[in-house]
Every structure is written in C-alpha cells, then in structure tokens.
Length: 273
Image (cartoon, rainbow, N blue to C red; front, top):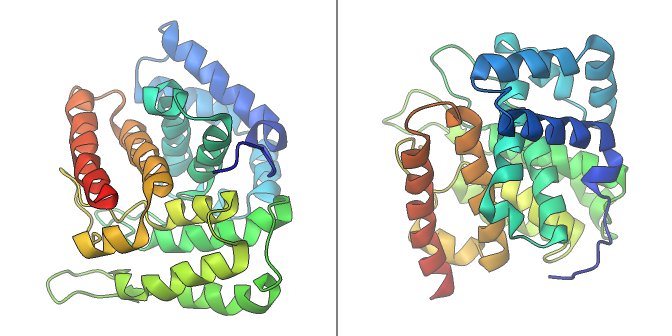
C-alpha cells in the first residue's frame, strides 16, 4: 500500500467532527462518559438540527439514518469512532490506514434502517453503494469507467438480496459478490484507498463470528478468494469498532472483543495460506 496520502483526509474534510470525536475520547478518559446515556447526551448536543443538515450535505443519507429509533444509529457510529480512536489495532496503523478507517466508520451504517425486533441484514451492501457514489464527490480518484458503470453497479448491488428458506428476512446475496467486487475495481482501481474503503464497508457483515454471526457469512473459500492482508486489517478494525459501538459500556465488553479477535485469527490464517 502506498505511504503517500493521495486521497482526501477525513481529518481535514470533517475537521469539526474529528475534533468532536477527540473530545469524546478525552471525556471518556477523564470519566465524564461512563454510560451510553452520557454518550447519547453529548452526541445529541453536538448534532443540532443545523449540524445535522450540514452533515447530510457532506454525507448524503446521514439525516435519514438519524431518523430511526431516536438516533440510535448515529450514537452507535460515534461510539464506534470513540472505540476505534482508542484501540491498539487502530493506533498501530499507518496514517493512511487510519484515515481510510475513519471513512469506513463514517459510511458503514449510513444506509441502515433499523426496526424493532428486526435487524437490517442488507445495509452493508447499500452503505457501500452510498460510499461509492459520495467518495468521488469528496475528491477520491476514479477510473475512466466510473461514469459508465456507477448507475448499473449501484442498482445491482442494492438489489443483491436473497431470502433463505430457514430465515424470515431478506439478507445480502453473497453469490453476487464476484460481480460487485469486480465493479469496485473497475471504477476505483485495484487496492486504491477508495476501493479498500468501499470493500470494507461492503463486507463488514460477512465475517463469521460469535455471539452474533451473520446470516450469510463468507465461506472459507470466499475468504481466500475475496480478502487479502490489507483488507483483513481494515475489516478487523471495523468489526472490533462495531463491537465497541454496542458493548463499550457492557460488562461483557472484553469477552466480545476477544471473540472478534478469535474470529479474525481464522480469517488471517485462511488468507495467509
């Protein structure tokens, strides 16, 4: 991976949000954030109506995402950021990898539509589409194929769902992944920052782990075929952060982190062999 930061920096493009997250880290470290309620209060105070509207101009879909369940998703996303900024896996990354991870976290749930007693099993694919549309507007580079492919690719990826016989809801259709992944590389190039960001968002619900396994995890063969060391590094941080985003204030926080680390030991072994 290149060590030059030839892509837009989260810290610059969203400087105010980045500073807010740094303030959350300081508040957590000094004992001013001890619960989800404490975090919720700070996130709701930050995202005023005006700031919510402004964020939606930069990240289309943010306002809609925030309309569900008393803003549970943006609070979760801020908790993911909080956990990410403190975790050793993130702190040991290069600056380029850290910037990519921040873009991943920002977009990973932007198309999520949570409902009572029903998880949104298809939002990773839709959120990847949102990132693929928005990142070029921010300044990420694309190939000459982008304009020709983006509309059809977006429709194809959004509609890539299936309903298993033994499950009551629609989930992502992993049989469509070869075409989806090929489209990402055709539009953004191989292993570019944008391609890695979008792939990480796309696959963040695809790793088999406990205690919340996805309905359609990647098979061992798919892990070997679709992932490499760079992508696994980002996916690992994404899933560790996602766990933090729901469990930071729970007593089983450490055991859930360890479960994620254990799942990725297997993934890393499959990719390296």
